[in-house]
Amino acid sequence: FFFVAEEVREIMAQLGVAKFDDLIGRADLLDTRKGIEHWKAKGLDFSRVFYQPEECEDVAPRHVDVQDHGLERALDHVLIEKAKAAIENGEHVSFIQPVRNVNRTVGAMLSGVIAKKHGHDGLADDAVHIQ
Image 1 (cartoon, rainbow, N blue to C red):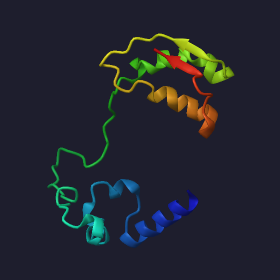
Image 2: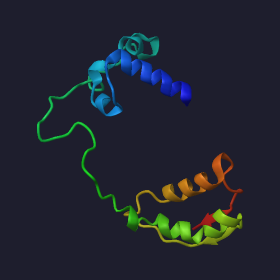
Image 3: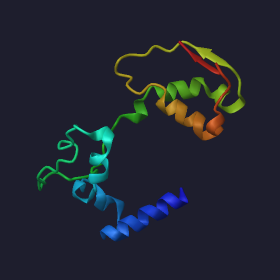
Image 4: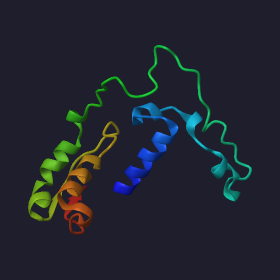
């Protein structure tokens, strides 16, 4: 990642941009010619992808307001707790957990905890079985 970060710094310096936040919404800085002239892009209309709407004074072009996504109420907290023996000790766990349509990201936080603890190797197959 070091080389990617270094190249990004160089490109940003060439563009005269100091912070990543200053790049958000700046479609005018994109050099689209290479991508559009590519043979795979022939006939495609990218005008909506690169469209820049007029800026509104009361709407920020990037995230500036704190949003409550209700993560403290996420079902994954229950899953993480029930899967703790597998995460911590590599034991196999199996449990039934009802899921409703309001549980929109089931397993995302659980997989994040597993990845953080075990890296690319993850857990053994079927270490966590949820019905």
